[in-house]
Length: 105
Image 1: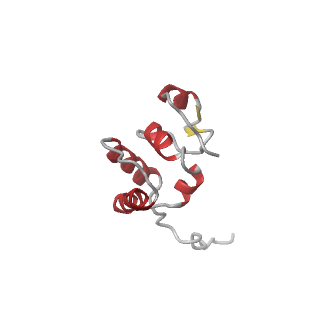
Image 2 (image 1 turned 180 degrees about the vertical axis):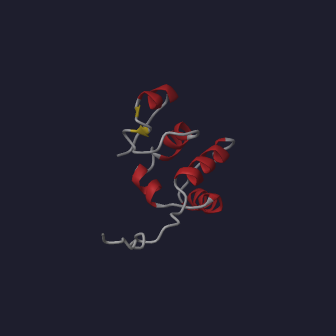
Image 3 (image 1 turned 90 degrees about the horizontal axis):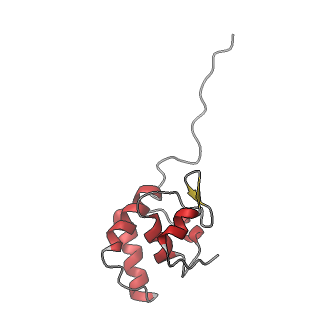
C-alpha cells in the first residue's frame, strides 16, 4: 500500500494503541516524517523488514538517492534516521530463546 499524506494531523488521527494503523509503524518522534517521506514510493513493510543501525539507514538513504531518485531530505534526514534506528534497529536476539530448565516437583 502506498500512502500520500499532506497533513501531519491526518497521520496522528490514524494512530491507535501506539501504532499507525495504515502502515503498522510504531508511533514515536519522527513517525510523520517517515510516513511522508517513505510511503509514497514503497510499502511500509519494506522499511520495517530492513532493520539497520543509524549508519545503515544513512547508507540505505544514500543508495536510494544515488540510484532511485530519492530527493534530499534536508533537516528531516536526521529525524528520519533517528526514528528508524530507534524503532527498526537490528534485532539482537537469535531465532529463539534458549530453553529454561524447570525443576519438577
